[in-house]
Each structure stands twice: as structure tokens, then as C-alpha cells.
Image (cartoon, rainbow, N blue to C red; front, side):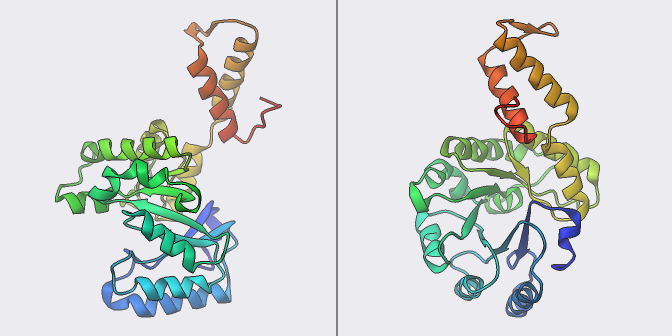
Length: 261
């Protein structure tokens, strides 16, 4: 799987030693995963390893193994204290990336100070973990997802205020692309920058959702052109400062430079 994963064109590859591995298989999974990465690093741009969280029996060995591996950094799950990130950065080579998971009641409640920490205490990105949050709360997951809407929005807002890229929750129905696409659209509309993918089918759907279409880009250009000309209406809809900001965001996500926009 490590050798094949680049075929589905993910932006980031994460080799998971945490939730994807049963407790009795942790040692064997770590050795196998690191051996596979040394034998053939995936052709994707960024490669990370999700380690087990602090406080578990596998955390220290995971961190030590990853520090010497041909990867770009780690994913730190169950992030709740700045000291956890500080310890991880100290163990890794300089310049390593650390993506944190906010997925517990305490992590969500403290999301803003956690993500807005200064300097090396600020993570490179954050993901919201709905499944672990509901398990921590003792709640139930539902198809509509209203039980996590507040937390999902709160983490995205905290990330935005901190200037930290945010990654939306996983969809565990790995072969139901309609469910995934609907959920991804909701995350995009909330302000998330990307999506956790558990299956190659989800990667393709995520690219479609988070990359602006030609129609969206054309509309964004119209809004900016109207604003530059002093026109306050496009297709019967008012254009103000908020719409200009959104239009620039669309073009940035589409990879269209400032000069061209």
C-alpha cells in the first residue's frame, strides 16, 4: 500500500500507526511501516507518519523511530497541551512538519490557545477528529453530523484565527463517495482547506470538492472585475468587501496568481 499510494494523487500521505493498528500489532506495524518507507518512499509530495499519542505505551518508540525515517514529519493525534508538540519537535530533525489532531473534549475546548501558540509551538496544520471526539464525550455519531457541528466549526475557526491550515474530519463509509462528497462540501463551506481520506476513491472526490471549478473561477473573476470598475452588482447580486475576499480566496485555491486575478 505504501508503494502504491501515490497513484491516487494525494497531497499528503500519512502512514498510520495509531487507530489503523490493533494494540497487539503495534510493534510489528511500526517495524513494517518504517521498513517499507526506507525501501520505497511514496512518490507523493509530503509523507508523514501518524504516531500513537503521548501517554500510550508506544509513543516514545514511535517518535524515536520516525525521527530517523525518510519522512517529512509526523501527525500527532489527541493534541491537548502545547508541551506535547514541543516534545515532538525536539525529537525530530529541524524543519520537520507536525500536523496535530484536535479530537478530544479538552482539545476542542482549548483549540484556540493550542493553535495560536507562538513560533515552534504552533503546529503546521490541524485536523478535526469527529469519531474520537464523540467517543470521548460518550455520544453517538449520526448521518447528519449535528452532534459534531459545533466542535467542527470551532476547530476551523480557531485554525483560521491562528493562520493554521485546517483539515476536515474523516468519513468512515469508505466506498460511499456520495456520502463523502456531501460531507466534504460541508467542510469546505465551513472553511476547511482539505479532507482526511481513508480510501483512494475519497482522494479523487476531495480534489473535486476542494479545487474550484472553472465556473467558480470565472465567477470570481467577474466579481473582482466589477469591484475594480466600481460596479456594485454582478448577475443581480450585490458585491461588497466580503464577496471580494471570497473571490480572491477562490482564485488562490484554484492556483491563479495575484497578478492574473
